[in-house]
Image (cartoon, rainbow, N blue to C red):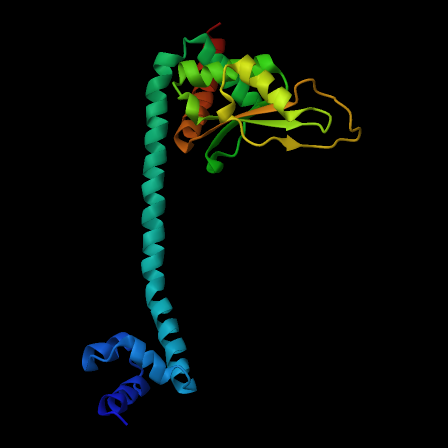
Length: 225
């Protein structure tokens, strides 16, 4: 038996890892693997080393998770502060208020998913919300995604073209439509349901903040009448 193999076995039985053995004997880890892979006692040592590493890593992982959570909360708070500053400038804009009211009533309310989403079958309502995003909030066209929900008797290509022309949004911004079947597989909605989406946690934080600020603003105004 090679002398270094004999020494490697001694070190391994002492509970040393491949890295530790390599540092002492300069035996490549690939060679150590070949020497020990079929030894049950070596596999038991490996499992014990893994458990020990996991136990030692737990406080570090918790600290990292907490630091990451704090970092994102600071960022979310900054979004809310920015929104409060912008509200003073935007509250007199009728399109801004219209967009907020539409989102308050029809928009996605799950803030953690980071998706600003409003769905409706009324083309005029979707157009107002698109103008709110594009003209007031300056969301670039390529960040606005359109998805349609259609009944089986509605032709996807035809209805994509309708919404594209009505909203002045290129077809490249449309995603695959969803087809649903109701109690009656007949056309119930002339143009289907249109879902207009922007993937932005920052924007969603701001919209939620603006809605809250508008509630306070409206309540103060009502009290003064």
